Amino acid sequence: MITRTSALERPTTKQPRTDRGRRTRQKLIDAATAEFGEKGFHDASIIGITGRAGTALGSFYTYFDSKDEIFRSLVQELSDAVKERAALALVPNQSALDAERSALAAFLEFARDHKEIYRIIDEAEFVDPQSYREHYERTAQRIEERLAEGIKSGDLRPDIGEVEAWAIMGMNVFLGLRFSVWGADADHTEVSRAANAMLATGIASRR
Amino acid sequence: MITRTSALERPTTKQPRTDRGRRTRQKLIDAATAEFGEKGFHDASIIGITGRAGTALGSFYTYFDSKDEIFRSLVQELSDAVKERAALALVPNQSALDAERSALAAFLEFARDHKEIYRIIDEAEFVDPQSYREHYERTAQRIEERLAEGIKSGDLRPDIGEVEAWAIMGMNVFLGLRFSVWGADADHTEVSRAANAMLATGIASRR
Image (cartoon, rainbow over all chains, first blue to last red; front, side, top):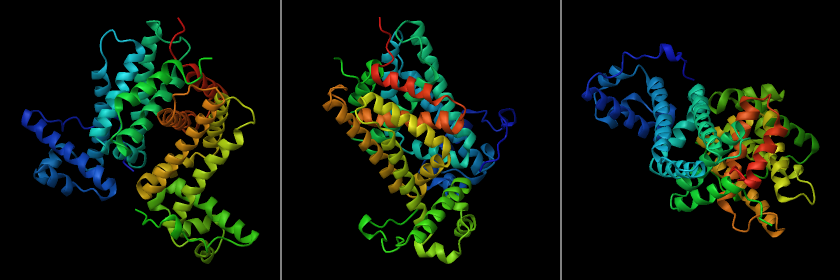
C-alpha cells in the first residue's frame, strides 16, 4: 500500500517547467496508463513504463520518485479526466436532467475509449485506498452540486441530495462497466436515454 | 490470476458428506473471509486461514486444493449470500417497487455486517475476473427478472429491462459503499426510502 503524504507534502518541485518537460511527463503518464492497465500494479515496472514511453530511465526520476508515486498521479489524472469530460459535455442553459444525460453519455464514450480506467481506479482500492475513496467522494460531490443547481432552477425535486448523488454515480459506473467495458458495441445514446428516463420520472407505471 | 476450470470440472468430490464435515468446511470459509478481507489475496495464506479456523492444515486440503480455490469458493458463497439475503427480504404480494426497496435495505444491512464483502468481491476483479463478472451479471439478471415480474403485474413501465437493471445494481452497490462500508452510522431506512422514491418516480420536479 502506498505510504500517504498529505496534499501539502506532495512534491511540487518535480512539475515540469518547460513545454518539452510537460510533453515528457505526459508521455510517461500515458505509458503508465497502458502498463498498469495491462499488467496491474504489482507486475508493472518503471522499466516497462519508460520502455513504452521511449524515454530514458533518468527522465522518469525527473518527474516521479517511484512506481507508487506515478500510480497515485495517474489515479489523480484519470479522476480529473472523468471530471473534465463530464464538464465539457455540459451545455449552457441545459435542463438539469439533460445535463445528467450529457454527463452519462460523455462518461460512456470516455470509458469505451479508455477501458483501462476501470482496472486502474479499481486497483487503487488496494494500492492507494485514499485516492480511491477521494475519487468517488469528489465525483459524488460534483453530482450533488449539479443536483443543487437543478433544485435552484426548479428542474428537480427540492428534497434530493447526497443519497441521489451516490445513486446516480453508481448507476453511471455500472452502466459504463456493462456497456463500455464488457459490451462495447452498445448504443450509448439509447443507454443514456433509458437511464435518464428512469432518473427523470422513474420506472413506476403511469396508471 | 486463477486458472479457470469450467463449472463441469469443478471439484464436487471434495464436498463434505457429514454434518461435521460441513461445519469444518464452513469454519474454513468463515476464516478465509476474515483472512482475505483483512490481508488481501496476495498476503493471505492457507496457514493464516487454518490458524483462524482452529483446524489442522490437513483439513484445509480435505476441502480445497489451494488458496486460489478457496478464494473462488468464497466469492461464489458471498455472491450466493447476497442473492439469498435479497430473496429473504422479499414479501409475498409486495409491489415491485416495495420489493426493490426491501432488497436494497437488506443489502445495506448485509454490507454493514460484512464490510469485507466489498474488498473480496472487488479483489476478484484482479484475482479471479470470471467470478467477478459472473457475480455482477447474475445479480443484474435477477434484478431484471424482478423488473419483468413488475411489468407483468402492471406495477412497472413495460419498456424497462437490462439498462435499468444494471442502473439499479450500480445504485445499490454505491449506496452500500457510502452508507454501509464508509459511513456505517447512516439511517438505512431513510437511504432505502430516498433511493426507492427516485426509482419509483424520478427526481424531476412535479411542476
